[in-house]
Every structure is written in C-alpha cells, then in structure tokens.
Length: 119
Image 1 (cartoon, one colour):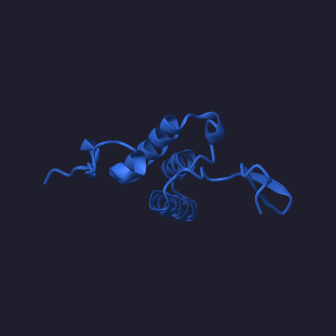
Image 2 (image 1 turned 135 degrees about the vertical axis):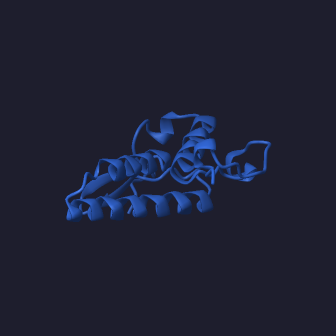
C-alpha cells in the first residue's frame, strides 16, 4: 500500500521510500535484479565469514538508483532523476539505458570502459 502522495510504501505500519515512478519499467527491472543479486551476495558473504562490504555497497548503489535512498526523487528534476538511474545502471551492470529510457539522443548501449574486458 502506498501513501496518498505515492512517495512511500507502507509495510506493517512502517513507511519505506517508494521506487521513483519515472524510471522506465525495463530499467527498474534491471536495477531490481542487481539489487536482489547484491542482497544474496551479502548473505553469502556473511555465511562464509567474508567481508560483506562490497555487496552492501552494491545494495546501496541499487537503492539510490531506484530512488529509494539518497536525495528524494520528488526533490530532483526529471533530468537529475534520469542521470541517477542511468549512472546506477552503468555502475551496477556496465550498461547504459537506451535513449528512450533516459531521454538522450543516443540510442546505443555503451558499456563503461571499466566494464570492458581485455583478454
């Protein structure tokens, strides 16, 4: 259930910031997939006695990209919101959203230089 203004989801009486509704569904789905993977990696690290910090950092990146943490999405311009989710997607997956997902003129996915492997 959402609050009347749509900014929060209410679960068991507790408010949680809602995902930015301006994020295109396919981008949001990729970000949620990255979030769930990072959450699983936190659990795996904890069970193995390893440092969960890298996985927790990925959880944070995904939550910020989705608008659930960081500057509230309702306080950002649409351009700032687009940049937030595009940067989060790039950082988490090495891909950029297509032009129709960001409003940019380029319609090509471009992996980040750090995501390109050199064999």
